[in-house]
Length: 207
Image 1 (tube, one colour):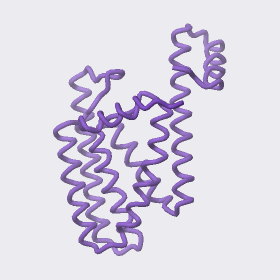
Image 2 (spheres, rainbow, N blue to C red):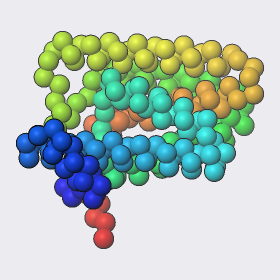
Image 3 (cartoon, rainbow, N blue to C red):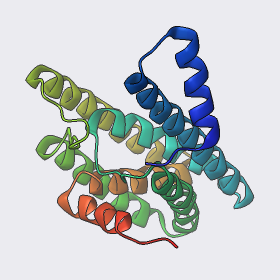
Image 4 (cartoon, one colour):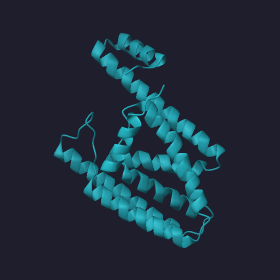
């Protein structure tokens, strides 16, 4: 994997200051690269959401993704750049879709909400936590803790969806739909089909 110049420079500076080995310097370079690209992709996604007029929905989707994936796991690209591009593309798109759907009759929002709750709970009970070959979950106790955490998060999101469905706030339905679509997308990331999609993305040749 090739790294950005500043990632190498920062890692080298910290290595010299702390006396780390060359192997740990490579790990540090990777961590700096991933953290920087993640923060950059989130910032760009929020800016794009603001330009599209769906900043709150974009921010909500990203926050839900952070909580959901931290415990439930899921498919991801082998390249931090590709992960960043997906983040920048998907969450503003979800927020924009939610805004459009919120203009339809309330029954559509309620059906999508029920579907999101069923799909989300089923995916977590049957599949979570989903690890990766690069970071396998070896400990049964840790696996159990992650599943319980994911289930608690999904139950909280389910209650929030129900509350929003009964709320008269002008943006309640839009936020409700944004959460519902985000849950369905994140649940898809737990499935074999979600992993196949990311494998396909990783195999796309650029340049």
